[in-house]
View: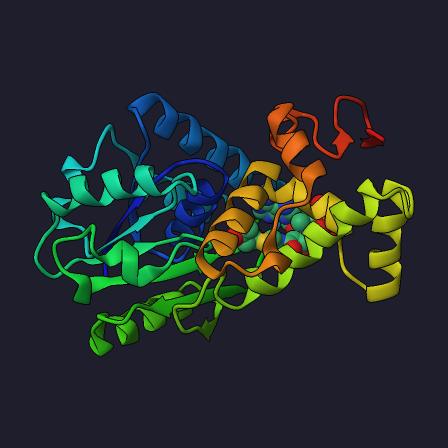
Length: 289
Ligand code: 3HC
């Protein structure tokens, strides 16, 4: 593999692009328009700068990684890419449009991967010109730091495509968990009910927001409490994932907590909007309840 197209330049797409470029491959990065892709590239430049400042990487390596990332206005320049990774919003209609569009320009051997956190891979494969070349490739946030990638073949994914995708993930320095195509795969199926339960605990005033997080940090040795983590992932993303798993399984244990729905309806989506369960406008996060 030499060139990877990354479609979606938000939190995940940016981290994916940075990680790929730092591992020596060329990245074509796009989003709804060129300006968004360019903003993402500028953010990656800042992230690489911080790594240089902390003496984690050499200046020359940061410059070389950045030079390998090209922001582009659409999928057109990805015609020769070896693989595309879609990392757009967790909405089926958005992802469907991306794959239908990309499918028209990609080469006949390109692997088509989605960073979806919960949508069934076998269903998504129908949106592409060749289900055999479609696969789930699920990264974790922050991508440059987290050591895991889940690889999820759909029912029709070719074995050779799965093998090449696992080799690619390992080339990025990550460990791979292979998951069957079941809702939420492995990690989110375990994580999202925990976050959701924490919101129920909060909604029932069983404990304060800070104590719920403190309990999980110190009682379970998690680096972040579940409400902090929800803010970090994005409350809208958490709700989208829960809804997809709930709709697919019809299992009531995945029903979203009403308070989570309320926060999303208020536009309090977590760190990215400056306010979620915590308010991030000051020096330190302040609980909102
Ligand atoms: N990009 C790159 N590097 C980052 C980063 C980012 N966005 N955020 C933090 N880092 C690096 C820092 O530079 C630092 O590196 P160093 O130790 O080499 O100096 C290291 O991570 C630790 O950062 P900090 O000291 O600033 O802060 P913390 O010690 O609090 O760590 C954290 C931050 C790594 C985010 C840690 O709190 C953590 O691991 N949290 C849990 C993250 C998690 O669970 N992610 C998975 C979410 S689920 C998911 O992504 C799936 C999706 O489908 C929902």
